Amino acid sequence: MPRQPTNDDTGTDSTATDQALADELGMDIGGDGADIDALHSLVSDLDGDVSPLVSSVLETLVATIDDLHERVTQLEADLEQTHEVATTAVGDAATNDQRLDDLEAQQETTRDVAKSAIAKAQQLEADTDQQEDAEQLPEGIEPSTSPLDFFANCRQSKVKTMFVERSNRQNTYRAISIAKRWPEFATTRTDGSGVFMTKADLQTALTAELGKEPHRQTIKRVWETLVDIGGDDVVEKTRQVGRDQTQTEILAMDMKTAEGLLEKRYIGLDLLENSDHKAATGGVTPVVVESSP
Image (cartoon, rainbow, N blue to C red; front, top):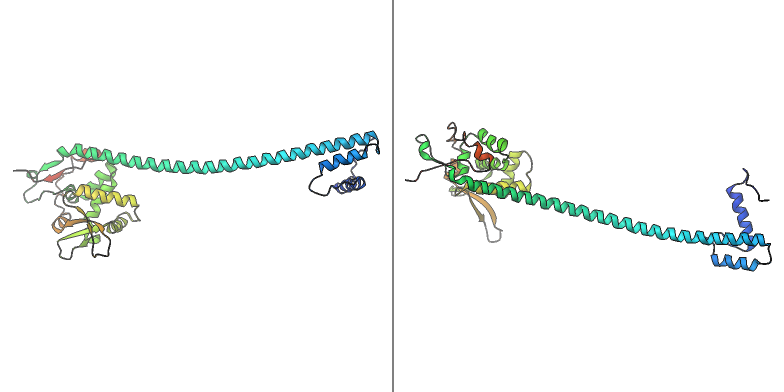
């Protein structure tokens, strides 16, 4: 009759019994796993020396161990395959994240290009009706020489309302404000004939204007806006002090133009009252010019 396990059986007792049986049969169970071929050989050698029942039990045990060994081998192979799949998945995920970042950057660039193209198209569309005859000005009031000169001489609170609050063109307003602050941030030529500003000067001026360091893209856009609205008043050129120094990009104005930005000659004339629509659609609002004879 088979022996029933009792509460007194422990893992230690079971291990000792298994070891004793292995010692009796000349088996080694202390390694990482049993040698299946050796077990088969041992069972064959015992044939005839033990009862058929014991022989059958031993053969069943050996077959079970053999199956378990194959199962462990298969599980190890599956584990290795799973690890490879997981590693590949992690690599693919990282690649996909990078591709997503690249696509987002390309989309942002495309959006900026589209905005710029639309703004320039609207600018060209508005060019035909953006000028006013100097005869509309009171006697003694000089006409403007560029959009920059015009806006710089209007009431700045109204200019800010037009470009910031109503048309979301903050960089245009920033360009006008920076141009008016040339005494603080621009360099006056040694002969007093004009002033100029480098991109480093512009960055410093924007930092003062914004109260924080500007993004490089903001510096670039404000620089380009100054060129656009400055017309012939603002000249983009390069400057090189000595042969050994690299050329530096500058925006230059003659002194008469620079001083004209500070005259405030259009304050109180309400020249911006009918200009909100043009500002909202992207066009540069009126430039007061001298009429042709």
